Amino acid sequence: MIDLRQLRENPDRFKAGAKAKNIHVDIDRLLVFDENRRSLMTRAESLRAEQKRLEKESGPQIGKLAGALKKATGDEAAKLQAELDELKAKPAHLKSEIAAIEPQIAAIEPELNTLLLQIPLPPDADVPVGAGSESNVEIKRWSPSGFDFSKSFEANRGFKPKTHQELVKDLQLADFERGVKLAGTRSYILTGMGMRLHMAVLRYATDFMTDKHGFTPISVPVLVREEAMIGTGFFPAGREQAYHIAETQRRNPDAADEKGAGSHDLYLTGTGEVGLMGVHMNEILDESQLPLRYVTVSTCFRREAGAAGKDTAGLYRIHQFDKVEQVVICKADEAESRAWHKKMIGYVEELLQSLEIPHRLLQCCTGDLGPKNADMIDIESWMPGRGELDKDGRPQGAFGETHSASRLYDFQCRRLNMRYRTRSGEKTETVFCHSLNNTVLASPRFIIPLIENHQQADGSIAIPKALRPYLNGAESIRV
Image (cartoon, rainbow, N blue to C red; front, side, top):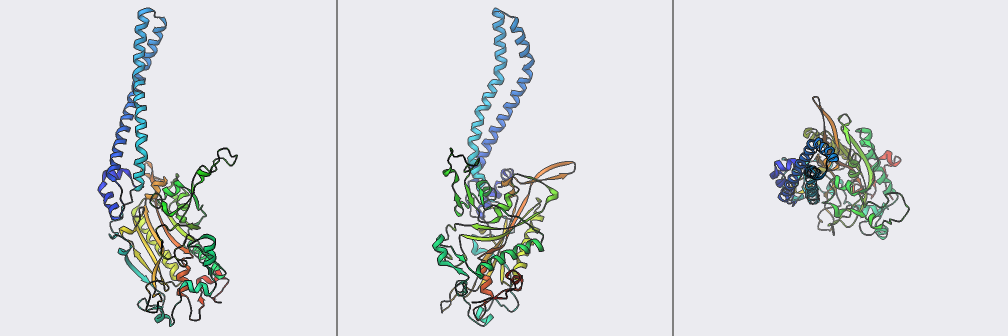
């Protein structure tokens, strides 16, 4: 969520930011709602102050009149009663005016909040302007010794590569037919060494972040309430991608089950980021606790709405997968956020290099950022089994996204109401934290570049040295 005060002060910045991200939201309408609400709140506060003043000033006089009324009779008593009623009527009238304003404020707030949740975080000034992913800018590439991007896989390695679909079939690493039978399209079953390889890369990535880079590993729920999805910025814009568990529709109010059971709809998360960021929702941290560095491995679920016809075969675009995710929660300082963004990308580069995976870094343009990001860097791994087909109908290789690193400043923390205490001179204040996230490794998608790049001429797959301890020392996968 953006800072409403900043929006009032500089609406053009947010209008330009939404336009750059190709997101339509009626900011002028929101500002009208905001002005109306503030005017009503100011009026109500003024009336309350006047009500308190009158009650304070008239209190002794009411007491005096009430005492006199007890002794009075006839016309004098009527006169005193009229004066007493008039004194009491003034604050009562103000109270009724306040009561009439409160529903007006309540009527404005839902639509105001709906619009406020739709306003994206403006992209940083150094993010290139572009309509979509086709305008992303390549930053750099890396490849292991002996691999030349300008040459085909065959020219680099001396044999024609198989696709990952062919490799998993030949080596019995996955069963797509039975996966589809069980769960429908974009489903799979990992088998034998395929499952072991999947578990190995997840464990390696987790240990890499905890043992080597000092992140704290924690488990998080993958079934969460709506406020966690809204708070992390995945709703409202990404609602169509989430699986919805409509608990409120199934609730039996007469059932003697656990108190509160079925009272909230739930959603399956598409990333561990939701759970990691939700851990400290509605909390005030101490500045000394920051930065918090968390890593989790969780099962993720995505409907892939709008992806009909894209990557329907294989392990690239699937409904269920496991992901190691890193999150940093730091102080509200742009320089610190930028420094952490660079570090988190560096961790992934180091991991990919340790597994000898050719890859490149892409600076995402404004149109590819999404609502919650001030900046985003994608990392794409080289996959020999993707890309345009040659004259023989074989893929020529292409990059495929495997990681995405985002810098969000206070956007998520403001929505999650996550703050920290800081001292400024003699004064203590609470400030919204900054947050960042980045994929460490998502599998089984990551298995694609791993097995395609490490395939051998005899059809086997060489296991990188870094992974061998997680596979009982095995050096290769073969029939």
